[in-house]
Image (cartoon, rainbow, N blue to C red):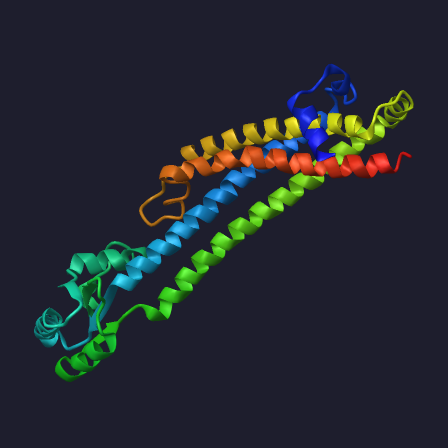
Length: 298
C-alpha cells in the first residue's frame, strides 16, 4: 500500500488527480492549517534553540566566575579590599580578580533603583569579581582563608541561584519541544478532518470507481498525494513567513527578553526541515483517514 501510494505521488496521472476536487474548503483548510502550524513551529523551534543556548551560556559564565562581598566599616573597606586581592593573587585557579568601581556597582543596581542611586549613602558591600581558570579553584579552602585573614569578606560562588536559572532555561527549552509536538499533533488532526470531509463528499465517486475496477490503492493514493502536496505547500509558506518574522524581530536591549531569540550559524537550516516534516504528517494523517474511510465503504 505504501509503495503504491509513493509511486502515485512521484509519478501521478490525470485520472487519479480527478478523484479529489482541486478546490474547495478542504483545500483551503489544509493549506491554511499547515501554514499556520508551520509558522508557529518556527517560533517554537527558535524558542527551544535559543533557551538551550542561553542555558549553556549561563552555566558556563556562572561556573567560571565567583564574587567576593566585603562588608566593613567605611574606613576599612579599602584595606580589606587590598587584602582580598592579595589573597586571590596567591590562590591557585584564579585567572583574574578586580574590585568593581562605584560606577559599575551603580550600573548593577540601576534596573532596581534607577540610574541615580546614591551609593555613598547606602551601606553597600564592596564587590570583587573573580574569574576562575580552566582548572577551577578550591572554594572551600578560599572561604577558610578569607575567614581567617579578611573577616569581612564572603565568597559567593552563585550556587544558590545558578541552578534555578539554568533549570528554568532548560525547562523552557523542553516546553519548546513539547510545543513542537503539539503543533504536529494539531496539524495531523486538522488535515485528518479535511481529508475525511473530502472522502465523505466523494463517497459516491469512490463507489463508482470501485464498480469500474479501481483498487483502493489507486483511490487512496490520489487523496494522499493531493493532501500531502497541500500540506507541503502550506508548510513551506508558513515556514518562510516565520523565518522572515524572526529576522524582523527587534534585537532588544542587552539582557532584554528578545536578546538572542532566533537562530545562529547553521541553526538557520533547522527551519528548512519543517516543510518536509509537515508533508510527512499530512501523508500519514491522510493515509490513515483514507484507509479508515475506504474500509467503511464496503
